Image (tube, rainbow, N blue to C red; front, side):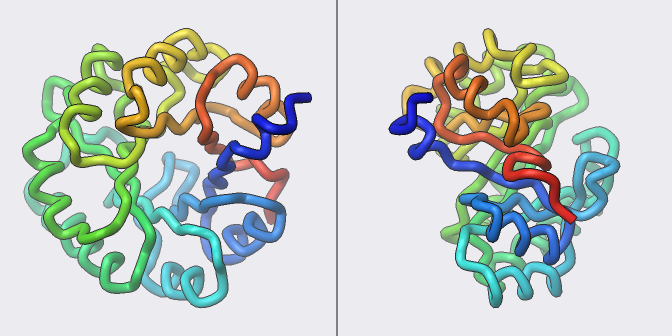
Length: 215
């Protein structure tokens, strides 16, 4: 195994609530994506959960900003709701947020994203797997890279798993050219992360079981 490469990898654990987050840190996660309702792909966690994580944990916390499951085309009231959540999380000292907004053509909605992120302060910004349902992932990813709005993009390359999307993920890493980080997602686990990191030249990987099974 190429240990020098594996040491440089950030393992982001996707968790539901404080207990899982705390357990993931103990198991070796380098960052947390904190959600509720993972059964629908994750929604916004409570401010109480955020404060617990910030109080008792040392690793960075990225909080999901998603008012509901389903698609990523949001109404004006939902956007307003997201804006309040971003402000609250910023004030609570969250390290980053994960957000994804598309228009009715399933393209990245940069205008709405830009408006919302005015409330983000110094928080890092992940554009989440909403990108995987866009019609042209490479084009939309390029748009995000050039926007200057985001820190990283979470994606499985439009496929069900990272292994299946490996070809696209490699292209995205090339397009990114260090402007943004590509966070590889899609059934990434503690069992396959070493193999995936050999195939896909990314430094950040994301999964529910990336550091093992969490309670």
